[in-house]
Image (cartoon, rainbow, N blue to C red; front, side, top):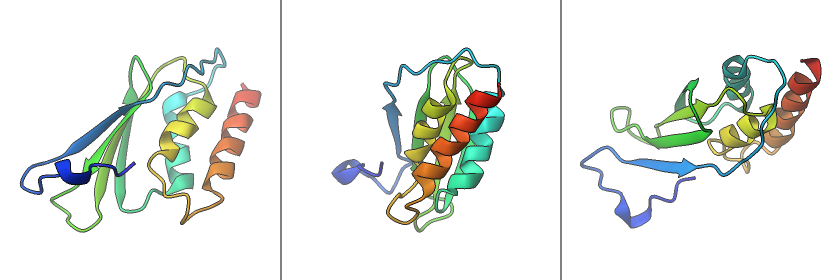
Length: 119
């Protein structure tokens, strides 16, 4: 999701907001924030600090971490109380370079299925 292109001004903090149009909701009873944190551990987005929080809609905000330099990034992920585990996993995949970790998609989705079935 690094399509900042020519709009990037290295003199100021840049962020890219991408609202995810996933209407995947679930009534399953599981801790969505804990699931998101577990998925981040599985996906290990390269050089990215990730924070998750409760939100009214599922979205990802990310940008370059100019204080750390290089390829360092930050991301903030909003998780609603009714998001499906699959929707959360797909949102977090936006932070991962799947070419570097080809099994990341399968890991995240398998974990999502397991969480939904366990609740």
